[in-house]
Length: 92
Image 1: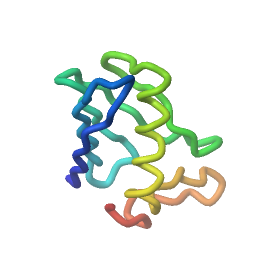
Image 2 (image 1 turned 60 degrees about the vertical axis):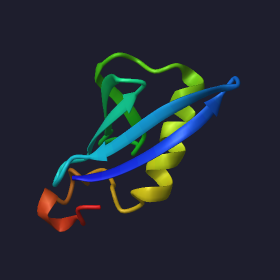
Image 3 (image 1 turned 45 degrees about the horizontal axis):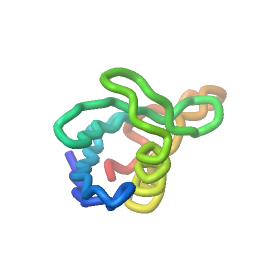
Image 4 (image 1 turned 180 degrees about the horizontal axis):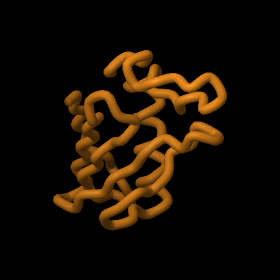
């Protein structure tokens, strides 16, 4: 599992954020100030979607989207038409 930790300054309040990529999956665990949420990459449009846990505020969600796009660029949706498998994608 790959971890990215950051402290974001949101409205003047330092907020600790940890993003973990689950191995061989297109899922991410996001911990914001001790609250765990899970997000994934949708199959249709490669957008980050909420799966479970506590939902994040829209401003925090935008920061999380940017962190995932920057540090995990090879995480893509699986093309259902070609029947790809998870083994075809890098684990980072």
